[in-house]
Image (cartoon, rainbow, N blue to C red; front, side):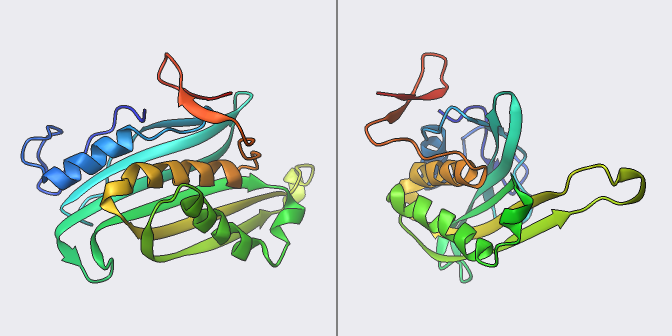
Length: 207
């Protein structure tokens, strides 16, 4: 399960669930029940202030052979009064950054393809959503002068928000985890392999 994160009320109250709307407490419990690939190290992070009355946030890193190859965060917002921009009372706000090969970053179709990584992950996990929006940014870096010996580097950043079905929040967390892995270049889990929690609470593909 996703461990350690607590919902945050906009009033600044403590992490206790007392006083939280039941629908929000249930959604946070669903976040904790989400199953992620073993390469994703996920933990709590401070939820943003003043965006919504209630919020819960996760950070994640994709770790392969001891090296971080991707990072991201996911924030679940809840406004019981509703929000016209969200067209609902919940909103997922996601961010993903991953390293690329420099030649990949020069592909004019990369931004469009990167956006489909999100929509395809949501579809694959049958996570219902609407009102999606966001940006994809591709950055390349070249070194000069005393740093000229360093190899060029490139990164892709995906920033997105969407309105989830509040009864399916766990599926949205799992889709975000898949987006992290896809952006980091990990191959998909093969057909016939399930992702299940191990006895230590981590996740691993098990046949």
